Length: 110
Length: 113
Image 1 (cartoon, chains in turn green, blue):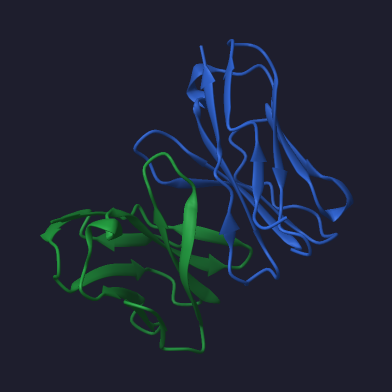
Image 2 (tube, rainbow over the protein chains, first blue to last red; image 1 turned 120 degrees about the horizontal axis):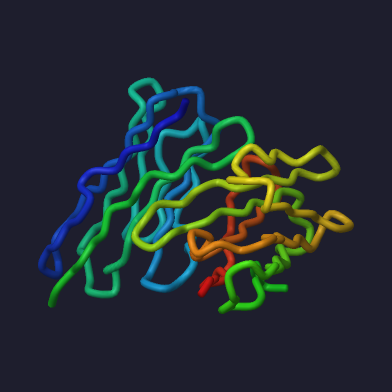
């Protein structure tokens, strides 16, 4: 059974820091991996999708890497801003469903 | 439409009543998912539709829960005889293909009193 774990569970940092959020999964037979952010009381916003054949994807200040063999993905946020404050979720595609981690709650203070 | 649309955004119902939650996926998306998020918890998979294939209902928590997808587009999640433990945010997502990028709606917050 696929299990997805995210570390740390919570993170509080001053504005301007570079951050690394971690996602690990137990079954490496995944198709894709997707990173989302969720603001309080809102739905999920897609950040990046990494195909299983890819090793990384970049969008603006965000860079996500994927190492299928070791069951890990990282989300790198450069020069963090208060507007980055949210919960970050990773999800892996297994057969016919997305399986989510429990998220990292990020707070960036001015 | 521009994104995944869910209605209603909020629903308060009395215990024992039936409720219907609606999801309008992005036009042309063949895959549709329902998830549930209880307060402070992660996302729990409920059901998955892909094209004309039989849906994956493996996540439905009890036989009080059912879902259908008409014409490969709009989906309705029905909860019969609601219980207080059904209170949660119900999220719908769609993707163009079964492993494509998933896009979520804003959710329906269900409160059973």
